Length: 188
Image (cartoon, rainbow, N blue to C red; front, side):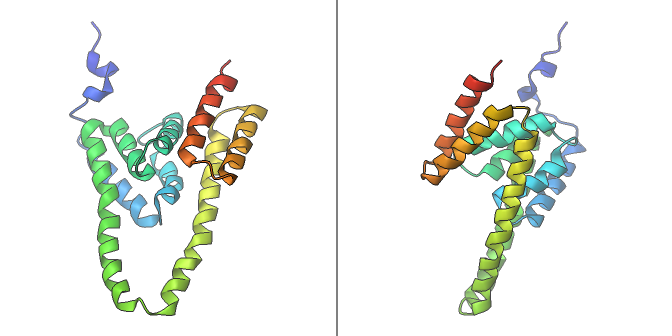
């Protein structure tokens, strides 16, 4: 007789107890060590692959969270938490993802409110932009490189997407069209 709970992971309401603290501390660490949602993807890649999800699951989760409305990082956290620990795992990963930035932003807001006229604060924020941009490019390259053997068609989809973004086509539309092109051109 087939055990339906093995085949339908969405019914998993009682994950292994030891996975929940591990999920919590992993997402606390990722959110404390990264500067933004997209920047956290690179760190999460190294933390989650092999522990909570496979590389294929991670790549699919990144693609799906890019298409859905809302925060990519929170959707990715919920997906990984759910894959590792069912509904409780998704909730724990979400809580651990929301908690650090919420507490930090409250503290920083209180401090910046007192220091808002200081010039170094503006220069600090300006200095973050190039570092975050490079981190996002590096992460995008890793995901593209691991995304499968797409050959020249994959490069064509990527280049077309870049050109579309240059013409200010909405990002979500570019991702959806690129996915549909992948279905049409890369199905063999």
